[in-house]
Length: 172
Image (cartoon, rainbow, N blue to C red; front, side, top):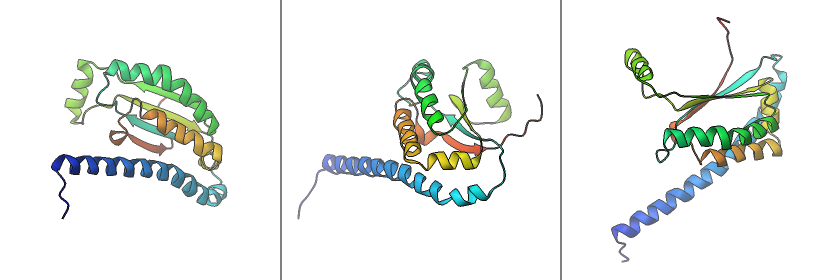
């Protein structure tokens, strides 16, 4: 019977997990295109032409300082993301960078919330139909994968959250 040392088992487990993560990320990106493509008919049947917004609550990678995170996000990822989002049919892209102050700590304590995110990102699309249509193309799948690949340079993706929203303006 072949015996593996603990170090070998740990290394094999790590390699296997890394391989599965790489596969899942690629499969997820392709799967997103297939999923969106399967929803084209339903989106086309929806008469709503309301804009839709993709919002992300972002956390930095643990090995980056806040300054490194914000610099990369604004100066490197920002211009790159703008191009990719335009390729996806987006017409507005906004980054809201967290400010780290005692006042932020006061808000989180007084409201009983968790740790603040490092920033919020917003990307506007003309409609859900337009977003789904654009993301279902080869160019859209490529643009989405390009974003995912670059996000690894500064974001802790497992600690981030992305969701679609519809705005209801109550003031302003």
